[in-house]
Length: 222
Image (tube, rainbow, N blue to C red; front, side):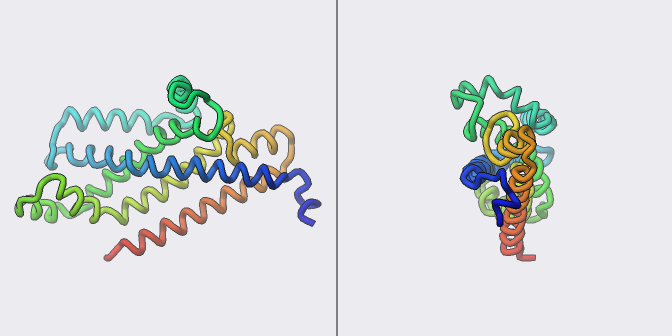
């Protein structure tokens, strides 16, 4: 029955493409979270009136973040081809998509981190400083714990964006469901393949959103 409704769908290819999409998304989400938190902390801490106030460093990081988050992802992939070839050795496959995915998403998430940190009550930070807490202690005991619900909510939004990025990366040979939908579905006019790939991408997005919402609710003590 299923083979009659979806005659062109090869399920072994669907499974392989789904694994590639999950692999690209998973690795890039972890790397984006780490880099985004670091960049976001630097943006916040070096801002005016904060613990490590430094106008030059703040302006430099802000410029880098603004530039990379403003470049359309499909163009970013092309711009990073020489770097990707040096790093990975090829511009094809799931691993080749990772540099562009991370570079494209980390600055976007860094701004979310900065916003989350700005929403923390400054009185809590000042109280910690008055008690003699070091900058590292304030980061690990105050800033990150207090902002964690917002950080998880932000990485959930970023993860969903990364699923879309993997689909775009598939168009230039990165593999995954986007690559399958483009090569097998669009170019060969096999609409059932495109439909199945789209449905699986939607399921991945819904699952990510559900998990992110659950974790955010569990961490939010308000």
